[in-house]
Image (cartoon, rainbow, N blue to C red; front, side):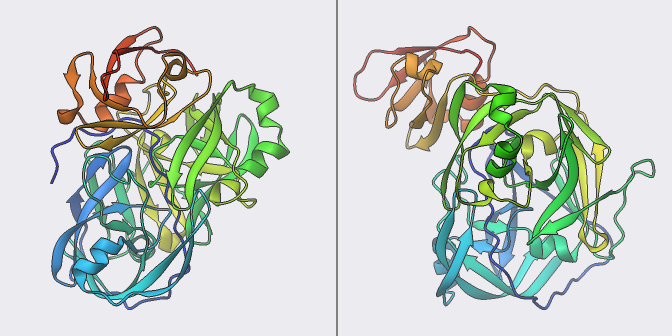
Length: 391
């Protein structure tokens, strides 16, 4: 277990590997609620699982995914992998394999005879430690599940009766493949939105929805960014801020909003308006009740916090004792400071990056407009001063 502080709103990765899984035999060993703590890093929910009586394996709990293992985790388990899968992710399609697992155990619950897809996950899937794969659909489809972001606890309800506040009304959900959908509105424009705990962003609007409603013309964004790196590759989008997002009875003010420019992958899907991730979801205690096609939004202590946006124009990735620059947005503070893709940041304001989490650094990049950060780079270059500004 890592002792890294909980994540703030960071756009690192958005998974959507949802190849079609077969129905598997499912078992459990308890009937009452089963709670387990989770770690929160870069807007992702991580839990530990025992697979085939080995482990623990560190897995991302993702409502946009089916069972996935990395090739390294599959090798550790000694699994026979068949190379027969094409996974569709946020960035496009990616080839992979599949393997059979006898049992997966989380806390006191087990699922047996599981199919896992074996895929290379993007660099940075877990900036502050190794990640062994993903779980999502198979558990949610079997057990109503509560994600309590404030308490960092995941609770499964094996008896099929989730415990929710009696004053909270259910919001109906549908499914696009295995992704949960809710009807909603963004600035009054109706659409269906996927709820994705594997996305650290707030709202990413799909390219066809952006184009059909001329949202680039509506919002007049000025900065294009690499908004995510997911299965299939990177996602590029304009960054802006909507006034209001409504999801059933839930309402969120001024969410950071990405206008996708992708032509492939789930960010270019025609059947949805967009994808809703951590930046919005962590404001609620979420109870997913797939068996009854409902979700419950209960506002928590984060509900009224402002949705902070990156003010640097940088996309970074842990690299040894520092952070490697993956992408620099044009006409952003990072570009104006002379930073380039491939640069490695060793220290910020004199504080070495070797002991710094990516969550902390990215939070610094969301500081007040005008904040100056002195970055020390690899290679003997003079320190760079980054002055934060609105993107």
